[in-house]
Image (cartoon, rainbow, N blue to C red; front, side):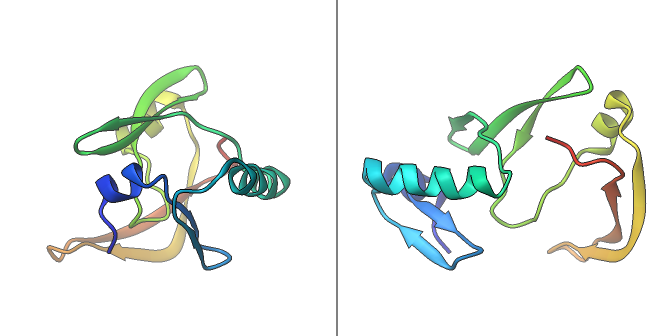
Length: 114
């Protein structure tokens, strides 16, 4: 497992879908990755670094919130933010399990959030 601080200090690019790791990328490598992600409909989001990790400020339906960037889970939205932003969710047949034994159902937004 790579530490967040080491990832930040070395400007690591992790491309999970293509199983690539780029350490201290140059401008050409950064531009190449950006082009690939833009083509795949990803968007750019500014990240804020704090000792506890990265945070991204997002706006959904005119409601702002700071999200913790996780390298462990696919993505998670706090249920109170879901209600505040009026995001319609549907239950999937999937479940999650946490390190302390907690379990729960996975819900996904009806409309894609970006």
